[in-house]
Image (cartoon, rainbow, N blue to C red; front, side):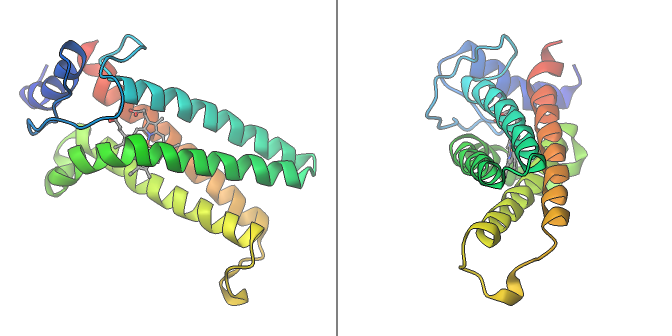
Length: 186
Ligand code: HEM
């Protein structure tokens, strides 16, 4: 394992699984609502395993939502995609934002030097964009809150763009999980 991995992965992931407190890459204790021990048998803590499973379920629900739209069941489509967006907002608030805040933000200036930070930073930035665009689509589609000039009319274009962006975020999230918790222990 290269030296930089020993400090970043080693401190966070190994201590997170072997002891009762998670420790961040800079040595600070990580405050978490969840138990520390993960359940997928990788080096990941519980919150990351839970988030990974939730994100795969949400991804499947989004695809189901696309099928609702293709069958012209637009009410079911709207309910499905809005629920995914809101549940994901909860996962961002409970798991991903705290992790981003505690582990990535302090190191952002040297971000692209290390795959460890680069993968998660690209993921987090694209994720914030996907969540913001998703909320914008829901507000335009389901409410009258915005003035006419702020509303789009090319529904399909916006929703397709959002679906592509979400897929990129999901894949980069799984990539982050691999780089953080699987590769160092392989
Ligand atoms: C918009 C949709 C999003 C999807 C589909 C998504 C998906 C994922 C997945 C599958 C993982 C791997 C599981 C894990 O390691 O926890 C992950 C991790 C992560 N995501 Fe996201 N994510 C999204 C948005 C965001 C946003 C907005 C942020 C920034 C605040 C973010 C920051 C992170 C971070 C820092 C991790 C690593 C968490 C850890 O393991 O400690 N993600 N994401």
